[in-house]
Image 1: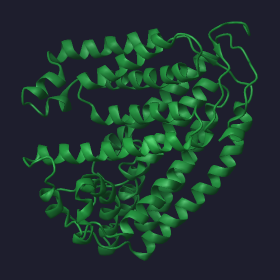
Image 2 (image 1 turned 60 degrees about the horizontal axis):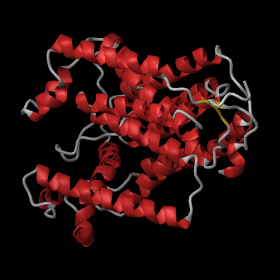
Image 3 (image 1 turned 30 degrees about the vertical axis):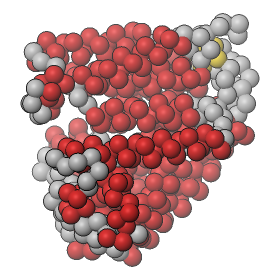
Length: 404
């Protein structure tokens, strides 16, 4: 099997990008720093408790990330990636999508373009369609690992990735497009060393992306592409930073989850309800059924800025202690799923990249208990289990820690 051309010997060169604890540490420290600039005057300053909490979870996650980096360096040495395309799972996901189209007699993106902007919310067959979405995310992520780390079957794996994204476009699932896209970027970037030129190139792309996001937001609300007055007024954008108005949509979106949490902590909007806390620790597909009265919604500083973070529910039902409990749940869950994936290098890269993306997006939603985002990780583990039942070759590869 060592001579099989479908077994890749490409190495991981940026292992830190596959470290979910580093991603979590970075994003929460970044959020604290952004909030300290007071870009949005309608949000209060961070309380002492929130500042201490942010610094604690950032530092603790970074330390755990160092040990995790040593762990993944040891566990990935010598393991190979089988790059043969995953057509069966792709076909299953497509069939489930087609069944939902026949059942609902519509395609969400077409309905949205015709003006029915809520069509995608009721699309699909209960239970069955979400399984199809999980299959599609798994196909995209597994195929991305095979595409970037494989030697052969490039076009076949790229086709799988394209079909997966096309499915999400057709069902108008912006969240899954963002999640899957972020995971693919992480997987691709983990294979390359960053040079000064590549960093500059990425920064230019980021600036262009933020300008485009700003222009789209202005146009969507009926203003000229470079007129951000609507958002500047809604968010109470600090006049000292008006020179950044063309990036205001990005700044407001990034600061809103932290700002809403700061607003609730300043006003002590918490109920101290133990069952409410339990509801926030369970997967949402379970809590909605067994504890339907607990929604975990927080009070909003600005009604139109509705984004919260993964710690919103914990604070609502158990104060600051609830936030710490949610944090340690995240650490535990991340440890378990990455450990379960360690025996299969393909699955390990897929799961690690996915958990990195999920923890990075934790500022936006509780990605550990949100089934729509977390369940694909379970599907990847199942895929890895069945992959282990097939003959696997071993080749010598440089460990990821030495090249991170």
